[in-house]
Amino acid sequence: MSIVVEGLSHRFPDGSWGLKDVWLTIHEGERVLLVGRNGSGKTLLMRHLVGLAQPTEGRVLVDGRDVRRDPFFARRRVGLVFQSAEAQLVRHTVRDEVALGPENLGLPGDEVARRVEGVMGRLGISHLAARHPRTLSGGEKRRVAIAGVLVMEPAYLVLDEPFANLDLPGIRSVLEALEVLEREGRGWVVISHEVWWLKDRVDRVVAMEGGRVVLEGRPEEVGGRLETLGIWEGGRV
Image (tube, rainbow, N blue to C red; front, top):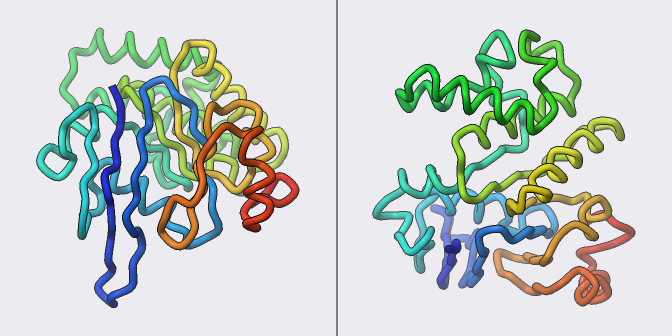
């Protein structure tokens, strides 16, 4: 099973191109780091994976289904954690926050409870269950946001700048959550400027520039070439 991007292009109303002829395959269970300077098209590509943006040309297939024709299937299979975790937290306790998605699906109460307790335990946030999300640290909020996506049991997890605006303890908190997924054999795609924290944890690095994929490969294979392109400098994009 895989996400397949075939010749994807996205043209804005002003005539400029946000994406141009992108070809990319992400396999289930694969850990991928997507890098590139601001405006390179990373976040726009992420939005196309679940039909939050419509292609001008090309298509995205999630497990063989065209996202344009079946966006709801794509959103069940691909879980997105957006950059601003705080914007995703709307309930009064962490437990209720994590339960929001399954409840919206109309799942039975015992199934909701099973999923919520399971994912909170796996991510080490059970002790936060009764806390108000606003009282949490930045790293804790990110973990709760990740839990709120994982509880939907997606096949693929995509995180947009999960380390943004976090201090060192917050970064470590998010890394611990990713390590849990790694031990479970689950894959993820991380869009990040903080290359240093992930370069030894991923199977593949994909670099974007000007709306195109300009380079991809194993970290040890592409690090020097990314530096030459000015995309990877001292561990930060």
